[in-house]
Image 1 (tube, helix red, strand yellow):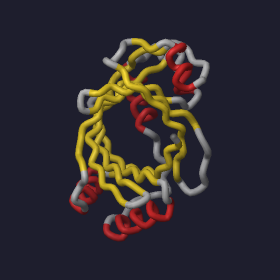
Image 2: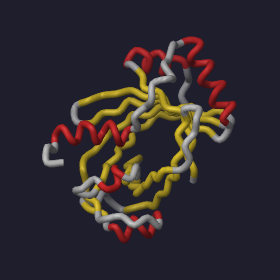
Image 3: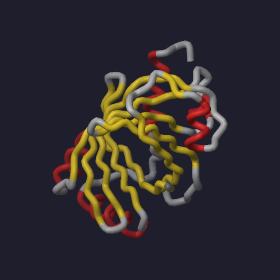
Image 4: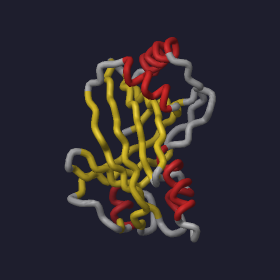
Length: 188
């Protein structure tokens, strides 16, 4: 599947203000266990390998680059398959079976936990995230969409009430996680 989304980093105050704007359809915690090779080959190729744990299910997920956009949206190919546990290592063979990409064996790096509030609209969905990793907390607004004009309308409604900076490029969760990981693993 191709994932299209707008992403905006938030302050804690902006997060709280947006959280109070909506009656959320669901709220859940999801735990992402990230993987890479010792040489960080996946990261260097802009490929995310994670196992997402939600409600007792474990999903091996891969995100691979798709198309670049000029409107601040991010497009990525997202693939997944169910697992029965969180592994310490994942073989390159298993990753190739899922994605057709030639990748090395990868190992567990650490965990990022996200408390996600979800509000669904026709053609778009708000994902309001509070993420914790390596003792750090950050806040992010994601608007995933199949209808870009619906996503833009939702974003306009929010920014009419809460000033947001859409011009700042957003670093994805995996990049923020890896930045902190590298501080704790000086051999990388």
